[in-house]
Length: 112
Length: 114
Image (cartoon, rainbow over all chains, first blue to last red; front, top):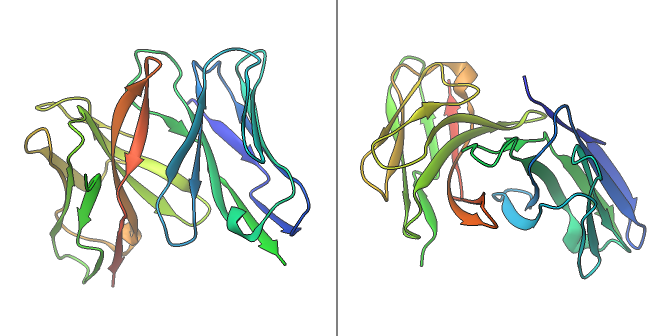
């Protein structure tokens, strides 16, 4: 079946260090979305990328969608304690699809 | 707008008991979803409803039933709860953005089955 894999599963960093999580799909995706879930909370939509090779930035967060539309990455520059949580990637296999395929997430912890 | 609301927030059941998890959204979204989240397993889709009157199975539908009562409400029923159904359950609804659906999640129901 279609799968979206995320690595690493867990990452611990010191505050101020950079962090990157990677998302890889077994099939070509129509789009990629990223969600963040704070500890004890619910997933919250961060961003969507739809074009091959697209790069978007939100303050210290940089999101990339691969040229082949089968992989994506989220990079956080100079992490802060507020970045703690689990980051999920998700995508649609085709535009007509009604359900997102979620990766299992990368859980980030940050120590000050 | 309250967004997506879920009741109850917490629930403890005994094996074999039944219960219904309630979900409602006030964003006039057509599509709604039920997920379960277990440690290390990410979000797994149980059922979804693309529009009022339709429901479809997701990745892990066994042991669950759903009802799309109207456009606002989508309930999840456990007929005979089992310890394997101990999990956090999230309801979501979605809107279209750039031709793709993005999802808004409720706060979750933390269910323990003893």
